[in-house]
Amino acid sequence: MFPKFALAAAISAAFLAFEAQAKTFKYETLELDSANAAVQYPGLDLNGASYATLTVDQAHSSAPAIITSLEVNFPNAPKLTARNFNLHDGLHQATVGNTWVYRQLNIIVDESDFENSNDQRIHFGGFVSEADSFIGTGQPGNLGQPLFDAWGRLVDVTPSKITDVKMLTVDGSKLRLSLSNKLAKHPNSNDENAVVIDSLWFGNGEEKLYVPISVLGNKAKFTEPYKLNISTTSGPDGDEHFIHVLARDEHGNELPSAEVPLQHLLEEAYRNHQ
Image 1 (cartoon, rainbow, N blue to C red):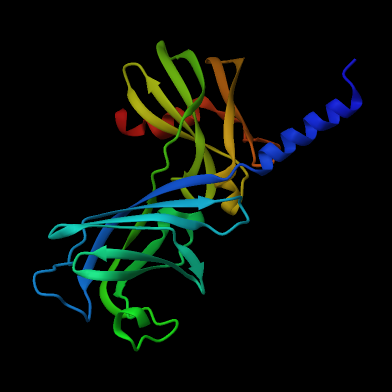
Image 2 (cartoon, rainbow, N blue to C red; image 1 turned 90 degrees about the vertical axis):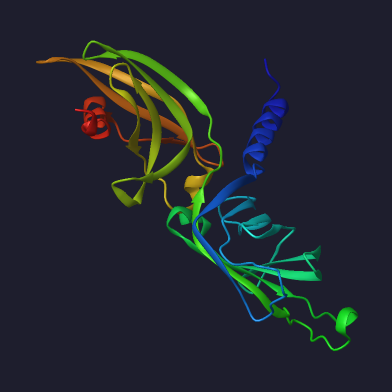
């Protein structure tokens, strides 16, 4: 018999493992643009930033998201990389040394709603540091003189993985369904989260199927679908398939999705293929 104290220790260890699972998220910017600000150095063109990526760490769903790195690409200037941000008074702040022609820059990113990142605008900028050690008259808390401003729209590009695969035949053609471990906003409802299933239907192509699941707010980023269930019943027009997904939250609690007719999902996803 398994000793009681050993069983309790195993349960406790499993609980702590779920509690300690911090996550890292990757973001890119769409519709990105930038402009020189008050300080302008001849030949340093920081207009029209073309591409930016952010890496964000979050300890758990209730913890603040902390930016760990920001990379900004400019068409006419070397890339800017800032790391080790601190969150203070609603701003993510980092210091970058020896960048372009400046001894030190202060980089700020306005606090963003990373929970709803795909609909979130982001603003960030750079300031030439005026620390006492540089000019002798710096003021505490002063970011410095503005060097550039940039703005765009966040998109979550955190890599996903496949956690379950099912094969079946629908309307005489093979159908492969691959379950993603990431939830997403349902494309037909900005307020509803959904499980994402990659569908490869031979003769029809590839699409994404979305199954609603009741997960609210920032908890969606810490919820992972892991099992894809398909049940089949006999109907008047042949077999009818239903999809039901199981997910786990950050504490290991099991969360079921709605049970949805597969035919409905396929018709919704492949309507433009007909």
